[in-house]
Image 1 (cartoon, rainbow, N blue to C red):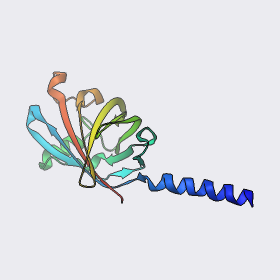
Image 2: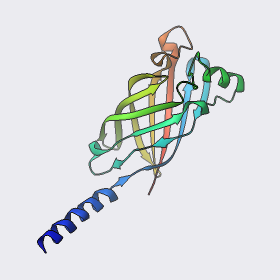
Image 3: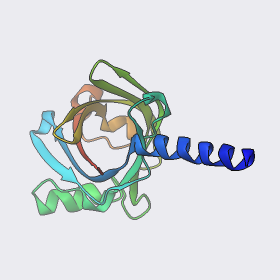
Length: 169
């Protein structure tokens, strides 16, 4: 009888923890390359993320997008960017992100993680706010840090990224 109670208690604890976690249903990822006045999006989102609202440090932000879906609303530019000189989507079909640390400060979720583009991995911080059942995040990075040198100067390779992650409820 006692063993049954212990097993039931452990199962109930797991159910409560699971109920406090969310996954992502979908994502909308857009970017802006200010030095060239180019905006675009990327799709093919896949996620293995879990959000723990009670203990944010237990959360995992992990996902990928398909590099071949990069879209700047210009077919010739898209073709060039997907080629071997820039994103090389044939050899590097996915762009991935994996959190190393998750913390919450007030309503702001701060995610420190590793972004891999074209086989190059760099540390990137994303800051999210919750809005209408979505986590909306922003990050900035330099494409040249990932082997994608559009302009000569590093500061001219700045890219702003916005992520809208819809939660499974």
